[in-house]
Image (cartoon, rainbow over all chains, first blue to last red; front, top):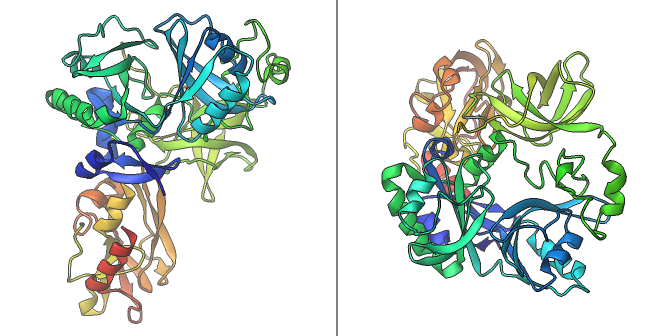
Length: 363
Length: 129
């Protein structure tokens, strides 16, 4: 049985197509996913992300515990700021990618993917032994609502006294939105400006309705996981299970910069990761644009046009609204960059290598 | 509930077949139910005009944002026309699945087999939704 977020009935009332995602019944789309994608690029979209995990870390050594458990240096994070980081296994494999917010001197919020947060909470509990730190998985009590797109600040500004213009990217502050207590964070997964609101589960429905009203004249529309996936793909952002998994290290994924060897003390994965930092990986995460109209998808082989030699594998692919062509991310051998094709169900469809991200917002 | 016109025949693979009455040439498309399930259709690959197809063969594909599905020949015969308009604008499959979004026409050789009535197809869709 799939779990439901507090907003399930709202989605059903909006005519959403619901789908199982990581054990959660989530809106895939409400109508046309292309229209939802475009709304986020040009106006704003409203997302239910309550399936994400919220794990609180408190105590005088909360930062040190996270420094030990994660690959990032979180103890130096200023209150009110956030970092993108990862939790790795002892062998260096990525167990999840995370955003960590420092809420106060002794309080952190770790946001984990729906598919992984139970494992992450268990690992954090295990790894924080010996530190004066408490791990509390509050995922079931929190809802997460995101407003993403160039008009997000205008829309939310009408509902809050919080200083949104002063809130930097990757920062978060406590406040009230439409009268509901929320952690207001300027983060997202769409490549646009936007906000993520962490609220109590029981406030999710009325808050969603207030935001919907406030956004009515600004082109805001509800957007599902399908649009979220094409938005993040255009923005070149990794998705756990596609670009990241336990068989890959942060260096394999081209994200070695998140591993902070300079921090004090040992951390889980250091011994395995340390020798890798100067070794060029065999494959590199690469942006591909198809010349034709068929779409490269997760798991399809990347091949040489000349003789069909397999030189990589697609991790994510979709038709791109912004480019008008199919796009894909793929792990491709570092010694090839042209003459490539994707094996789309037996047919070798030519692709061009481009720099990531595919889409960058103007401003 | 998506529309299932009474005058058409259907397949379990969510295609509709029109024009069986004259016993010669049929028009084939994708049902509204299937179009809704697929989401925004972005690419349609159809058989060549003149191709000989056999009922049940995969002869093309329809690709949406999230998935790709085969198109099957619902009858045996020769493809006599394909809808170039839908190839150029695949969104017609979503906006007008029983009209402008038709896919191809087949001149039948032998009678149709195993097609469903609208009532039978309604049962198929209720089981899947």
